[in-house]
Amino acid sequence: MVRVSTPTIFRCAEDFVDRYKNIYISGFNYDFFVQSKELHPPFIRNTRIYSCLLIQNDIPYRWRGRYNEDTDLSLCVLKDGHCTVQFNAFIQEKAQTQTLKGGNTEEFYAKEGTLPKSQMIADLHPDCAKVVWKFNRWHHYVDYRRFKKNQFIKKEGVVIEQGVNNYGMKLIDPTVDNTIN
Image (cartoon, rainbow, N blue to C red; front, top):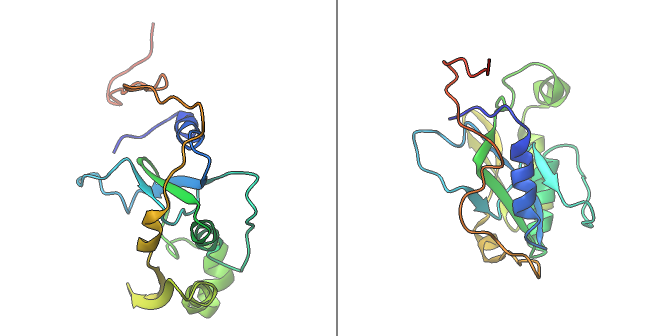
């Protein structure tokens, strides 16, 4: 894994998504789901987008529910035939649920556990979601396979250039002083 110290990755994601008229939500995968010792595609089509979301502003969907709003929003978009993109080329560091104090851990999970949050998604989307027990707590499981048929629709007039655009980013060795004298 290579740490990125520039916001340019957001521009890369925006430029990719802006090529298509039906990618409504995109975002970066979590570092703990993308192990650096394994090969991963640069992105995954039509799956959930968690936490760090790039959302097309004019979509008709809005946040709802008490928890898992990102999963619900992703499912609403996908069920209507639109697309999501989860980037693996750039990933986000995030602490796993319930590993830090504060936020939803103290507000919800410490008092009621994870069953209500998991059940909410299963109740909102019973056609593709269910509640499962794993890792010693309740989780929601969503089967995203049916959404793989949702295809990206390229915007008219968009030309995708061949070759690599590094957006001015450079790979540097963090153990070396890279300052210019």
